[in-house]
Image 1 (tube, helix red, strand yellow):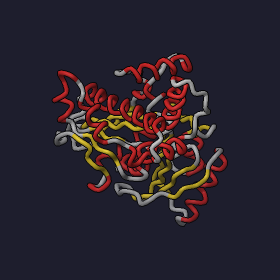
Image 2 (cartoon, rainbow, N blue to C red):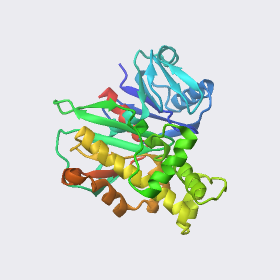
Image 3 (cartoon, rainbow, N blue to C red):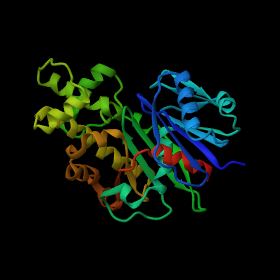
Image 4 (tube, helix red, strand yellow):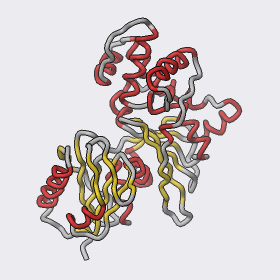
Length: 315
């Protein structure tokens, strides 16, 4: 029986990641393919397997920014769906795992090397305690790892990114009012995400009486990097709300195993991420400030975390 498994992440809206690994081993770096339809998805897999000398697969795992329902996972970023039964036939393997992309990221945490995450604040992680993983990309993902008592972990899927947004300052309240007028219900994802930073920028412009078109996230980052006040404030507000969410999650889950920050927005803003401001907001929890301050916060640095996490399903 073959030991190879196919690993596929299709959570990014512009490309597909594919990797191969032996069961129980961490995969090497992934290969990227353009993907905008089920047909192009299957073509990419066929080309990839051809390049790997067409190994007979023990199984495959697919992660996406969606949830499985009835053996089907919808791909909102790509406009099609993946059916488990169809993929079984296509890949000629009985085992197909369909996984939310942030669950896959969470599963990767215990497999990260020492240089693949950096500590931002907090004390030492407590062994065999809950670990929280949160991160902004096109949306705001969240998952948790719970120790199973046998040296392994169980991933808990959540939709915490859609919890209600709460302001703690006059400017946050003013931004929230603008977003309520625009969306009605305003979740944390509306401000802690790539499109969320643009929405904050547009709200600040409206508050200041400026009807300028909201720039792209790349333009906002470029403006902030040159000292533009509104661009910098939009990023700072987003990251302030992110810090508040991180400490809320630490409290709700009792995540004494640590809080891990992941997601492409952090990579995009780079040095504009104000660590000191993040730590102050994260630690500001009134009577529970000491409790939260002892919980370590890490920033993940590893690429392809979804792929690393998917491989653990075949241990």
